[in-house]
Length: 248
Image (cartoon, rainbow, N blue to C red; front, side, top):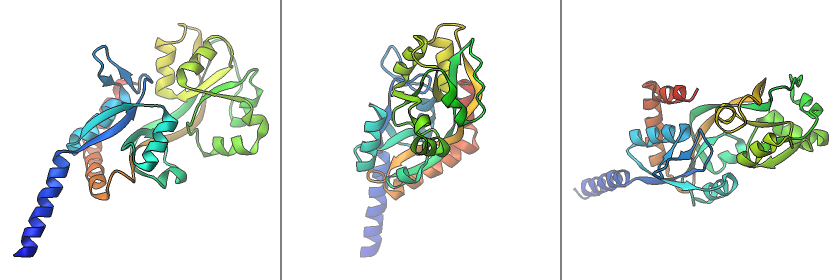
């Protein structure tokens, strides 16, 4: 009888913890993945994807606006619960549970419309007349990361800044190109950069998939399983694909 009562109490406690589930999720101004509406609500491709996942898991979201590198550090120590658009690496796996894939992550080059850069491999990037803008703390694939470490002439070809700074540099002609996610790049050409002045280069710098990243410190295995099951459900229903198609 005592064991039955203990089991019932544990069950009720577990149900109650899910009923009050509320996790912090990192966001920042980075259209079309994230942007703030006039009323102060977060919206965008990544926001819609995580909201669909949390709705199925019956968990609430508290969005927290912060830079990528700071968010990574907080995720590691449990000061942040969830990061979006994470490439799964061995290093990040030490402090992150990955759920996904969330979205395809093709990194492309935005270049001037009148340019004709003959780029078919990473080595060719060294021949561009000026440096190339890339994001701070962004993972551009294992081949790119290895080449940065092993090829000094390649490494010095890049300037590190956030997306808005890189776009401003490209607009002013301070860099030959910038590398960014294909959704962000297409949006930037249509809505931010001078009309008709820039285009996407055909060469994909890297092609991979990004994940939902849950902190190993703050999200226990029981709750993680709820999200894993929720992901399977929304993926089978085609909800993720429907959201992605709105932004293509």
